[in-house]
Length: 202
Image 1 (cartoon, rainbow, N blue to C red):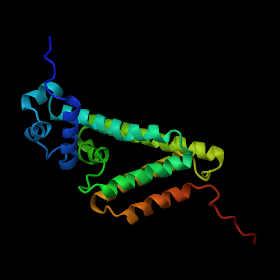
Image 2 (image 1 turned 180 degrees about the vertical axis):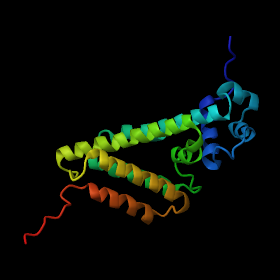
Image 3 (image 1 turned 135 degrees about the horizontal axis):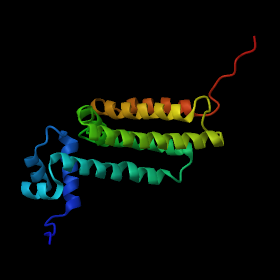
Image 4 (image 1 turned 90 degrees about the vertical axis):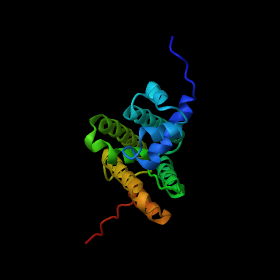
């Protein structure tokens, strides 16, 4: 029979998440992870495999606790309110983080995705989910007349995804509320219905 875990696995994962999030993947050693998690290196390998396997578990947990939880909360909101709340909370988290850690998913895209096909796929799939959420909200807003129909929902969703990623990267070095809010407000303003000016008769 397998021996039961002698430590709280979820608590250990949370500590590993904070270590990776603060220092990055490459700069974090297995020894540092074990110390942060309060376990031996042998226990780390037995429970999670190698450092790469642990990072995969950490990234899955991060997505579940941040993105999945938020999307569940946004589901009952009106389309425009859901989009505005999404960006407002992202900016709030960015501004209030004293370490300016950014988004672990975006950090993974920059550090691991260029040379790791598996993590490139994982990150791309999550980005696609975010884009799908944006697209769903925009389609619903277009149907009820609160969001513009000047562009397709897919095109507008891709624009919002680009703005989101830009905000997350910018916040690492310039976590200024006014700057980040300006980027979000400009994008959200373009979505509002009735913003196209009528051509003057000549």
